[in-house]
Amino acid sequence: MVPTGGIGQRYATQVGALWVGLARTLSELEQYAADPLDIEEADADVLRKLQYRLHCASEDVFALAPPAGVERLHIELGEALTAARDSTADVVEALDEDGADAALPCIYEWRGALFGVRLARLHFAAPPEPVDEPQRSRRDLGAPLKALVLVLAGAGAFTGGAVVGFWPLWAAGMLAVCGSFLVYKP
Image (cartoon, rainbow, N blue to C red; front, top):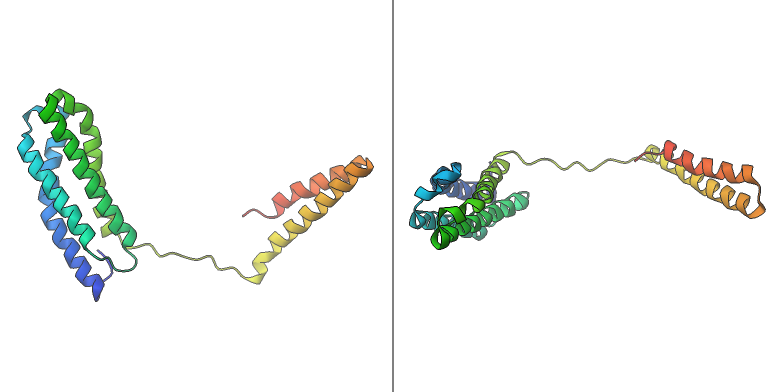
């Protein structure tokens, strides 16, 4: 799930406990959100309780201290839980104020926010991707240096040809600058 050992192991245990408590809440919310036409049968009080569970889970996430390497995933999880909580609140508010017809436009955003929580969990389950720094050596500088020389010579030839009015020199300068794009492609 996350790096093991020391702080990472404790963090993995805490996140695992969070998911155990959150799995049922997400399942219940997804059942309500699965069919937009069934939103009429949704009980606003039950949705409020589920919204509160999302709120508690997001607070629990922000109370954890992630180990190095999973900070981005940790923030993504907290933001996904907050978005799901807010979308659930929008649906509950629409149900309370104007009924199921008013809640229908909120359903798809709500489903997307709930999916965002599941997606954040999947990102947590995947091993972190190693960041490879490109290794540059002296021989890798050959193409950029050739392109630089072509650009400088081409600019000089273009300017000189334009000043003296000698179009073949001017054209050769343009070709040299264009050739630099062929010599070096980053």
